[in-house]
Image 1 (cartoon, protein in one colour):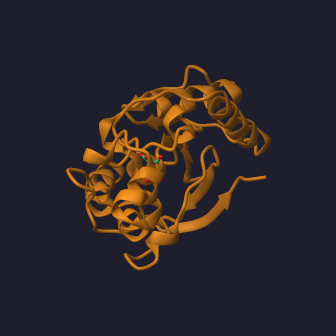
Image 2 (cartoon, protein in one colour):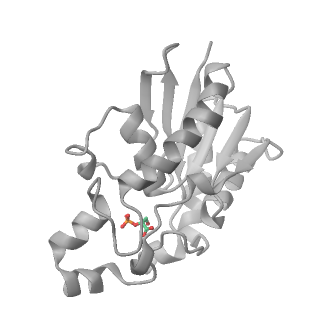
Length: 206
Ligand SMILES: O=C(O)[C@@H](CO)OP(=O)(O)O
C-alpha cells in the first residue's frame, strides 16, 4: 500500500516579496509564486504522482498554490478541504512589519528567536510550539487516518504550519528545529510505514 503524503509550502506571496511578516494576513501570490506553484505541480507530474484528496489552509496563497498544482497534474476537480488549522503561524503584532525594520528595532537575535525558535512567542502571536499544538491534532485526526487507509494526500500550506508537521515527521527537537527552513513551492514527498513513522522522504527540488 502506498501511504503517500506530499507537503508543499505555497509559492512566493506579495508579502514574502516585500519582506513583511505575514502570519494570518492574506496577500496573494506574486507572478514568481504562481510559477513556483506550477513548477511544483510539474515535478509531481514527472514523478507520476496523483492524489485522492488535498488539504489546504484558510488563506488564499495556499489555496491558490493547491489549485495551480492540481491543474498541472490534471486533477482540477480533486476534493479539497480548507481548514484554519493549517494556517500559517499567527505572527500577532509583527504581522505587516518589515523583517529588516524589526531586526533594526529589536535586534537580530530577538527576531531570529521569534521566527525560528520552538517556544518563544512573538508579541500577541503563536510560537512554533503553539502552532504544533493546533496542526498536530488536525493531522492526527483528519489527515493521517486517510494516509493510513492508502489515500494519497496532498497538503498545500505554509512555512511554519509545515515546519510544525515536518518537526514531528522527521523527529526534530526544540534544539534542531531552528535550522529547518522550507522553501516556497518545493514538494516534500513522504511515504509512511504501517506504524505511521516515515519510510522515505524525497525533496523535489532543482
Ligand atoms: O511571515 C510569515 O508569515 C512567515 C512565512 O513567510 O515568515 P517567517 O519565515 O519569518 O516565519
